Image 1 (cartoon, one colour):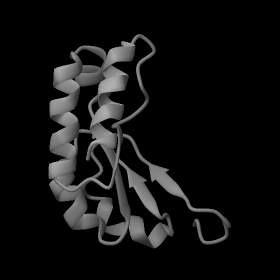
Image 2 (cartoon, helix red, strand yellow; image 1 turned 90 degrees about the horizontal axis):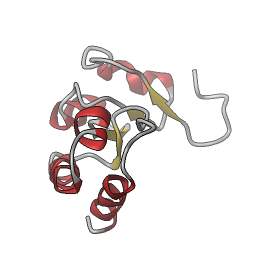
Image 3 (tube, one colour; image 1 turned 180 degrees about the horizontal axis):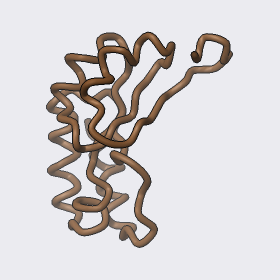
Length: 110
């Protein structure tokens, strides 16, 4: 699927994608972005060599949490083996800047 694209590629699929993960490598995508509905440890085990991207909860944590919640969840993502820290899906428009800064801080200190 992605083999003809001459740049590194990432695939994002919304929802609970645990059953798809063993097949993501066959798409040719370098990386896979997944929602917080999937535990990072499970994703890491199933993705093999595919780079994992995720999975801070966009609504529960980024929108409705505070910076400490964001830091805690981001650190758990790293502890569980995520390769690239990112929201589990799109960032809600009303997310507070301090929460995004907390996520960036977690990424730069890990």
